[in-house]
Amino acid sequence: MKVIADLHIHSRFARACSDKINLESMEEAALQKGINLIGTGDFTHPTWLGELKKELVEAEEKGFYRRKGSSSGVRFVLSTEVCTVFRDRREHTRKIHNCITMPSFDAVDSMNEMLSKKGSLSSDGRPIISMSAAELVDIAVRSDRSAFVFPAHAWTPYFGVFGAISGFDSMKEAYEDQEKHIYALETGLSSDPEMNWRLSALDKYALISTSDMHSLPKIGRETTLFDLDDVSYSSMLSAIKEKDTKRFTGTVEFFPEEGKYHFDGHRQCHVSIDPDKQKGVTKCPKCGGKLVIGVLHRVNDLADRDPEYRPKGRQPFIKAVPLLEIIAYVNRKTAYSPLVESTYKDMVSRLGTEYEILVNVSVEKIREGFGEEMALAIENMRNGKVTIEPGYDGVFGKVDLLNREKRKETFGWKQKTL
Image (cartoon, rainbow, N blue to C red; front, side, top):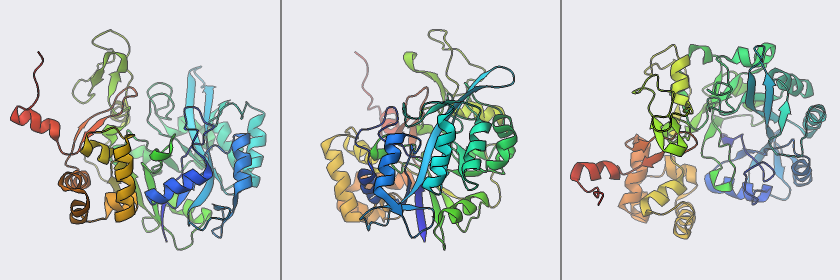
């Protein structure tokens, strides 16, 4: 059975997350996206956990859950994210976001009981706990041997395990003796598998992708793909751990340049720096303040291979732009406009799920139903024929699907300043 999974989700109880997030709305969004396995998110939060226990029942697929009374086919896996804050041996403060999945509520209860002794679980759906990343892994594994812990958005500056601001240079350095239990990492929106392949030290880890969604439209903006004969929690984990290309079949990725930490930069001064072209620049050329060192810079620092390196037996991946963004771009609207929302619903109703539209529906069928520009935008996305203004310092990049800005420059359409 083909499984499209999004394992890193947040509830309305996590900071800066939509108050519209509940299990029913998550299931509805997943169906539109074409996702059939989603994380619950935030199982450490007492109120949210109460809702999960009330509304979910064990599914036929062992280790997964379904919503009571629902026959949609969408399955849930118990998941959370924990921020560990600690000082390393050199007294440097480290802040790492870690994702965790569990196969049962008993395992969740056991872990939460141990975590509650280290810090508050009710203040945020993504709790901030004063403990080392190694200690968190130890607690998770002691709660259940099949606990799955992986670094969240591994390269982002502030909370990534390899982030420029508080991260480490190796997984072993970050997780110490518990690194033996880490067998995957989340690449995050600002990096893709190709960038991670440049580090031979990461060859042993599976590269997975998730949305880290804070609002319903963001579900599934990145996903991990499986083809499982035995659909179960243990089967999913073994496919990841073994990097079995027949069962763990790939990922759906952002164009990493669209991620909001791809380049170095300083948001307040609107300064973006390409570390490949401006090497050694660490201060803002406008104000002299520190630049936020981005993901590409960090990959360059730690890489021991050329960007063109491709490992054998690797999982394939697809680069995609969320359908709402494509519709907004084609119509020159914001992603939250009524026209974009109604067009999205119309496309999903007539052509299939968002995943099918982005990946499989014929360009001709898209053209017949929604016009030349929509078809060409999706075709260009599939073929990587796009222009991107990379993101930096918390600012998302801009994907030009029809290369409009390039055409303006070529044909002199750009307006001059008065």
